[in-house]
Structures are given as C-alpha cells and as structure tokens.
Amino acid sequence: MQKFLTFLGVAFASGLAAISIGANFWFGTLLTAGAERWLYGAVFALLDGLKTVLVPLAAAALAAGLRTKAAAAIAVFVVLTVRSFTAEIGLYAHTKSEVVGDARAAHQRYADARAAKARADADLAAIGAVRPAGDVAAEIGALRRDRLYDRSKQCAEATAPDSRELCARLDRLAGELAKAQEAARLRHAADAAAVALSKLDVAAAMRSVDPQAEALAKLLGIVVAVEPETVRTGLAVLIALLVEIGSGLGPWLATPSRRATPEPAAGPEAARPAAGEASAEAQAPEPAAAAPAPSAAADGAGAADGVVERWAAEALVRRRGSALPAAEARSSFEAWCMTEGLEPMNPTAFGRAMTAAGHRREKVGGVMRYLDLALAAPAIRPQLRVAVDNGPARRVLGRMARGG
Image 1 (cartoon, one colour):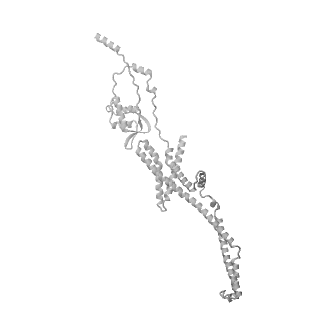
Image 2: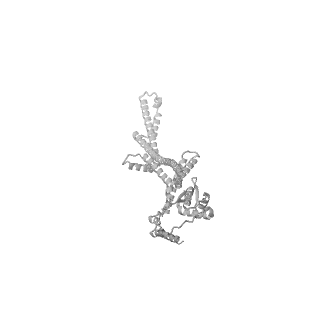
C-alpha cells in the first residue's frame, strides 16, 4: 500500500511539475511576437524544470553534511519559485483577459444593436405616418408641369394668386418628401438593426462575463464588498501558489526519505552482568599477562584485515545515509589500537583493509568519506573488583622456605 501511495504521489507531483513547465514555456512565448519567443519559452521552461529538482538535491546535500551546498540550492529554489510564480500569474491574467474580453465584446455588440433599433423605432414614431416618398415626388412632378409654374418662372416671380398658391403647395410637398425620405432611412436602419440582432448569439450575449468571480464576489459581499476584478486577481494568485507548491515541493514530499537505522540501546540488564557470571569471574584466577596480538605490519595483509575487521565490529555501525569522514575513522582506529596494545598500520594500508572489508568510500564535499557508516557509541563496561585471599599462598611459601 505504501508503494502504491508513493507511486501516486510521484505521478501527481510529476504532473504538476509538467503543468508548471508548460505554463512557463507558454508565458515565455508571449513576451515577444518574433521568432525569439521560442527561445524565451525554452529558457523559462528549463528554469522551472531546474526548480523542480532543487529541493531533493538540497535534502541530499544536507544529509551528506554539505550545508553550504544545501543553502545555495534552497536560495536558488526561492528565486526560481518567485520567477515562476509571477509568470503563472501573468499567464492566468492573459488568458482570463481574453475570455473576459470576448464576453464583454459580445455584450457590447448586442447592446449596440438593440440601442440602434430602439433609436430608429423612436424616431419613426416621432415622425408619424407619412406617404411614400415616390407618391410625393410624383405629385411634385405633376405640379411642375402646370403652366402656372412656367408663368411664374419656377416660382421665382409668383405674383398672381394662382401662382402663389401653386408655389406654396410645391413647398409643402417638398417638406413632405424630405419627411418621407427620412422615414425610409429610419425604416432601413431599424431593419438593419433587427437583422444584426438576429445574427447575434443571444445566449453568449446574456452569459456572465466571469461567473466564478461574480459568484465569489457575491458570497464575499456578505462580509465585505468586493469587486469581481479583485476576486479574479485573488484567484490568479491562489492558482499560481498551488501550482508552485505542488511542482516545487511535490517531488520531494512524494519521494520516500531515508531513515537512519536506530541503534539498539543497551538496557541496564545487558550492561550489568549476571550474578553467576560475576561470581565466576571473581573466582577465576587472573591471568598473569595478556599475550599481545601481532602487529599488522609484521603479519602482512591477512593480519591487517583481521585487525581492521575486529575494530570495525566494535567501533562501527551500519547507518544508511551517513557518511563517516575517513580522518575520523582513522583516529578511532588508532585509539582502539592503543587500547588493545597494537601498533596501528599506516593510512594507506588502513584504507586498503577497509576496502577489502567491503566498506565503500567516496569523496564528498572535498573530503573522503565512508558511506553508510557511523561510529558506534562507546559501550559501558561494568567494573568488577576481584577480592583475592593471599593467606593460603603465604602459608605454602612459608613451608617451602622452612623445608628449603
């Protein structure tokens, strides 16, 4: 189950990282209109990809004791995260503005068409009923063919009563013709507005510009008055923040961490010898002198490996993720040799013996270290005092002296 959950976590974190990289690439291409926009997109994507692996690298460096390297990785991660955060906010604002702009344009086109039709209808209602312009023009043409019109020199010298009446009628008909022409123009404008309205998508025109922002603004309006534009900006910040957390920290959080194997603590029963063992040690005669072990240099490579193995069994423990400096291991070995009465081997022979014993070493941070090893805590040895009765020995020596 743990492996399955780890797999899901890594998959989701990788997906968020891919989305973040894609968003940065897209935003980079929006910085310019030329062919170099692809270069900007690649730079932004590579920087975001580097940000994704910096936290695991910093954790590995910290586990190896390289604090400076870990601090540098975290500092670069913070800088790249801020840059990616601003890029994702810019991309969200750019795409949101396009969607909102299209909705507002549809609203505006619908409103303009309705306003144009309403104005045309109002003007037609103000003009009232009029005869068609063709009928008025035909009547004017007929009056201009009258002899009175020619006698008055096209109403320039209308002195007779009949001529004045004809010219006055012609003036009234000219006004009616202009009114009829204006009515015709308004009817054409109203018809054009109606056609424009019929071609518009009424559903798109009546749709909200940003339903999410407007709904959240209404909910927040219960507590404080907020404009939809402010809510839209807050959503951009929230989405960018979530993507950055998932893509930057997700791979590190989903990857299982190495845990050091805890050393079993020696209990008081283990540190304190049993009563039978203590009495046995007390009754056992103390050896005269311990025979010193042969030196590593004298007995060759086989003896040297044996000495190193004895020291490793007592002084070292396996601990995953640890890195024991070679200098500290050498110092511990020399101190152990002094305790055991042995002559320590030279550093080169010591390193070969450690390699032969299966201990892997690498250069980490400019220092040679043994991997997955650590110094064991010094064991607490019980101090036993043995009381020796020299009375019988003295009596035997006395009899031997008297007999001699």
